Image (cartoon, rainbow, N blue to C red; front, side, top):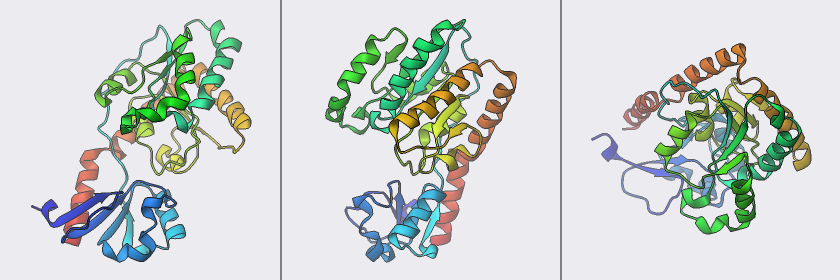
Length: 281
């Protein structure tokens, strides 16, 4: 009954209904879909952002008044506790290819040829990546050669796009989340899920990633030059692989999971959304 009073629009405004309106923004402030907001913000009873970083961007770039906009963090369904395999070290990348895969693949290959092949157990890279997640498989075409290279590499495996439930099962056997992000995330569900899955998370601080990570991860400073970025990322990934069996790191990852499960939980977020709707009704 409460929801019936509202039109909640996830990012893409097409038709306004005669209800109280909330636009739930997931895009960058510079996205063309948000270009109408400086003149039309009064069309909405509230503009909701998914991170504080994104809110600051909307205020600064779109001149949205502070009173018209608020943050409602993204959320996930926590991943249940589980045991990791101890016969290999598994690294996961699970987002679209344009967000950092072109840095990850050659970096992993270099580290494997230089260091990882000497380790007591195999180090493997598992890539779950395709624009098929958005229904745009044709956008995979520029990455076909890289996908083929991954598929043919002895220590890399390419899965393409897999169903979300299947991906969550795979994460239970992963040890490290490798995300050399070159994309300004407005939030990051993948990082939230990796934190909840008990992965050591190696990623840049680009966009809202530093906010999502909340100081629990192996985050490093983004660099504009790809080669320098790759060098910084390589050092952090190397360190992460060598910390997989470290007791202090395992304790930190456990606390990281507890944080993610508590603060990025849809049960908690549902209560916050209910409070917002009741305040606006």
